[in-house]
Image 1 (tube, rainbow, N blue to C red):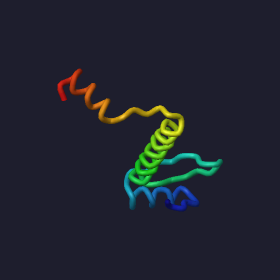
Image 2 (image 1 turned 180 degrees about the horizontal axis):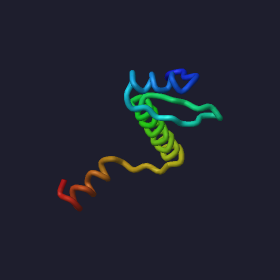
Image 3 (image 1 turned 90 degrees about the horizontal axis):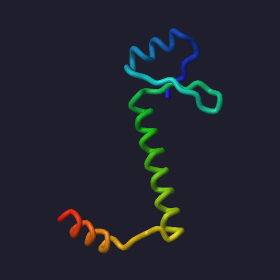
Image 4 (image 1 turned 90 degrees about the vertical axis):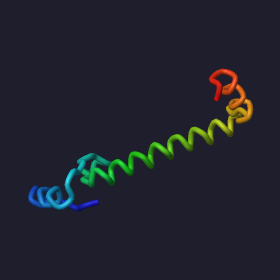
Length: 78
């Protein structure tokens, strides 16, 4: 992340780093490279899916993979 204290710092940061995103986090304005932002979103998405998967396992919402693959083979020929 880049610390910006005035508009000139912002212009310099954009010129040096290219595409950037400005967002709010806990009432703070955050400016980061678009690449860093996309990486952050991807990590959050993966974490969300892993937490859901863990909840599914904990609550018995699972099936044997062999059964699923057998159904796919019968239904789709794979």
